[in-house]
Image (cartoon, rainbow, N blue to C red; front, side):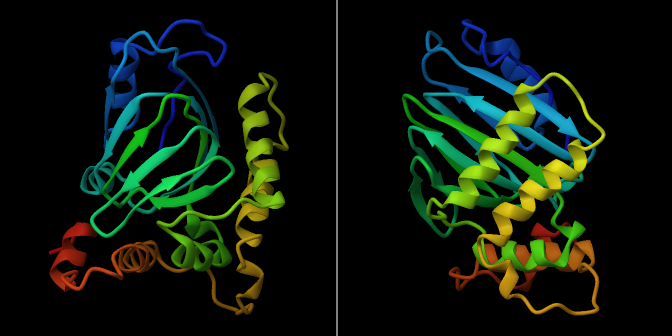
Length: 235
């Protein structure tokens, strides 16, 4: 997945229609609507190899995410860690709805379809990564996906570190190791250390996506093999 810088985090100008067009190019699975064109908004992003971090100041904004479009664009296996810094964000999908509050964190799959409503003073951070990199990441994601995660010191530290990587203009060969360590800190704090070590490597991408989709829709009694196949882009 590719994130691009659409506005400086320090820009006094609102995020307007030109930024929406660029956001649509960078996020082909998202539809964005702004409810007040006089509100100050900004988005500062950085890509580090396969990882992408975006710091968002986007109050009074609605986002529609399409899992089908993400899968078609090749993002179906990716996950997003979302930190809520300020304000609130309303999350809703076919099976659940809740409000993410300051200090809380959320893991979502790009392959999922959901709706987001940011309130008047929303500020957050999104880190996109491939869970297939490590088996422990996969196990944690399947347990924690699609539900609010309570604040904790390790999660706050990981979010602050990711935000710092976005802000600093200088680049370092150690940036990849740094961001991997931040993902480790966040996910290990959610109980990945309880997963027994095995000689098995990461799950194949299609199996991981299937597990994530089942976990996301576990409360839906109508979620059958046909719907799973459709979400995976299979016949």
